Structures are given as C-alpha cells and as structure tokens.
Amino acid sequence: MSVKVRAELIGTKLHRLYVSIDGINIGEYERSQEADIPRKEQEIVAAQAQLLALFQQHGELNVRWNAKEREKTVRRSDGVRVGSIPKSAWRTPSWF
Image (cartoon, rainbow, N blue to C red):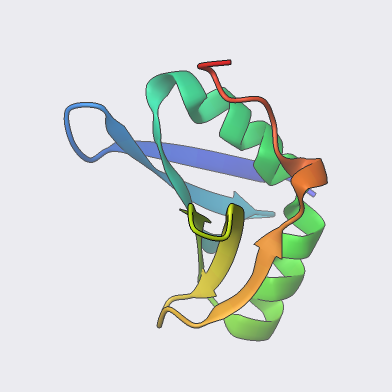
C-alpha cells in the first residue's frame, strides 16, 4: 500500500495532516507541529491496514488524541467514534 501525507499549515505552528492510501483520501490524522510530522507519518504507516479497513466501513476519518482516555481515537466525519490507533503503532514524541 502507498501512504501519502500532505501537511497544511493552519496556524502559526499547527499543521493539518491529510492522509491518502493508494490514492484514496481517507481523512485527517492528528494536528501536529512541524517537528512531529515525520513521527505521525510513521504512525500512519504502522496503522495503515486498520485505517483503510475503518475507512472502507465508515468513510472519511479523523484521528484525534483523547487526553482523558489517553488514546488516539478514530472518528467518522460526523464525530462518531469507530476505533482507536493501537499503542503498538505510536511513535515517540519529539519532546522526549
């Protein structure tokens, strides 16, 4: 599978990460500062099979950090939670 991430600056520091797999736009992965974009790309590659399967079931996805639950939740475009990114796919943040 071919994964591509397009970063779009949305403020003075934050970027929106658009994800496509095999040319199909599947949605947005966590908003990130520039130093964290390579790490997030690695996470997307590690979770690509799961993201693609969820996309095929639910359509466009948004991945966000849920601080209360300490997990990366996957939601449909209407906000309904449909899964989470497994910790095995997470990579070490730039500030560690």
